[in-house]
Length: 471
Image (cartoon, rainbow, N blue to C red; front, side, top):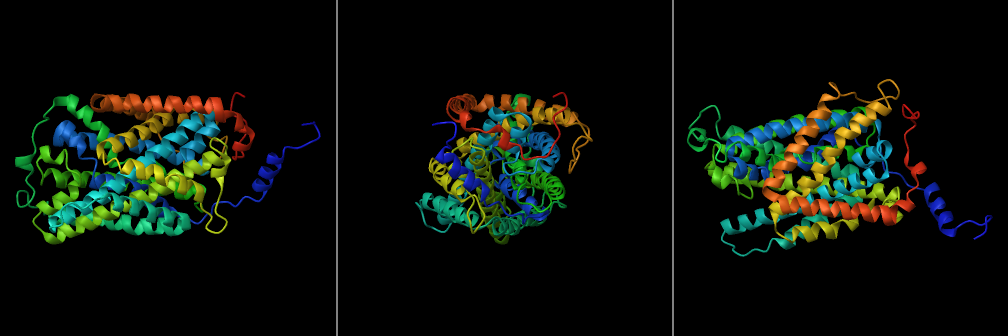
């Protein structure tokens, strides 16, 4: 090709870019709350209780509050950076602006895998809950797999059709699921110890000592995993500087309350040995309450929570994948927006078979562990990202929508808790941890060898910022 000619592919790509359809800015703080809490609240209905099997009921409570501190740091850091880097992709968008392409690729992949695995776990819960209901009504041998496929397909269709409708529905069903926890709490009469709740007889000392408490940190993450997904809405909210911090911080407050109530109810109704391996602990607690009405409320609440979580996961995973495609970290084809519905429809569709294949394994604790570890890698990136962000663009150099207090203390605490939780995971799932690390190392090598050459770094920086300090 001579110097005067132009590559045909470049001309086509330039034409597409010049006529690019953007995402709709239609969301407010309520939708951000619904996205963050909607993804996470299912963790109150299942998954968290595996921490009881590791450290006993008291160990799970310690994990609940310690990991709650971890996620409070996550919410504070995310609220500052994302209200400033208001672009789809959340932490991925932060990484590409602050840390560079290789870190951005890995963070994007962490997000996609964490949300897709969580979506698969949600589909498993829907199927398992229907199997439990079928057995209770005399229908033995129900196959949960068709229901897992159906829920993923229906929610993918909803996401395909538009983000406003998707997250408006999420707000309604997430609020209903949260209310079901409050109803159960009131229904077990906590003001009358011993009437229904039996904490005095069921609570024991730490069965495995303090090493068990540390091991329980792994599944304590499930109380809050996904609250950082609020950042994925950055390009679709009407006022990022207001909506993102408000939706995220109210979301973590909601989850701290829900997590504590969940532990209190379940630990007073179920022996820790059973609770530590139950599939749907809050529903089981509703059954143990002796009230058919409470059992119905918790069945509906569990279904709503799993549905809201899967719905939000499809939204967040597709936004991360879409952003990576738009920036050519993945094939550019994935960066398309539907001309009518204004959604990243190709990214939504490509992730369906991945979620279904993991749901078909039926291995709930393994799927949860993969999601937890991918999320944990993303949290480990955040303290470094926050420190670099403040160092490169100090306060006053750029406009921030929110400034989190006590810097750098939240970043230091977050890093320390992430390292402790990695150790906790290694105690119970060391093989899975090593396999996951190997997967991400291979993916990084693939990116450097095959995709980095397509990345146009000058096109990535969408923020009108001055040069970083020291450059």
